[in-house]
Every structure is written in C-alpha cells, then in structure tokens.
Amino acid sequence: MMMILRSAFWLTAAYLVIRPDVQLPDAGALSAQAVTAGSRIVATQVQQIECDSLQCFGGKAAIAAVLPPLPPAGTAMHADPANVPVPYPRPRPDRAS
Image (cartoon, rainbow, N blue to C red):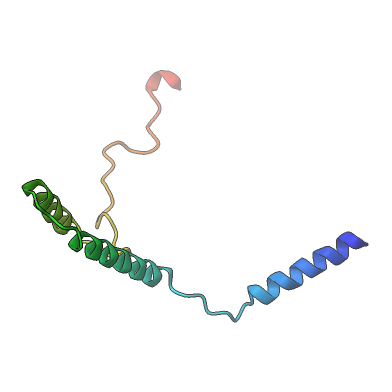
C-alpha cells in the first residue's frame, strides 16, 4: 500500500511540475543568448590583459580574430544530403543465388 501512495505522490508532483499547458522556453534562443554572453565575457577579459610584448599582442589579436564569427546554432551543416554512389542495399552477386 505504501508503494502505491508513494507512486501517486511522485506522479502528482511530476504532473504539477510538467503540466500539459506549460510553455517551455525556446532552446535555440537560450543557447544563442548563452553563447553571446560567453563571448562578451571572454572579449572583456582579453581586453583587460596588460600587454608589454609582441607575443602578448599577437595572442590578443588571434583571440580577437577567432571570437566574432560565431555561426548561429540553428543552421544546418550541409544544404544538400550527400550523394550515395553505391546503391543501398547492394545487389547480391550471381554466385549467391
């Protein structure tokens, strides 16, 4: 009997947390905001570094060149699917018949 009461409690708690009418946030928008905020933090931290050598300036320039062109998270890697040169499944050889 205790197992049934415990199960009913956890099912009710789960239903209250995950209701059918709950609007979930857009994961793509959240990840884009997180990437933007992270790149801003890294850029500000890199700008605060005091440089006195050419190697330091080169490192800052390399990091600055890498940071800005971040692709959006929702774009596909390939526009068209790759062409398969071999038919799938392969035809059986004549000796297998």
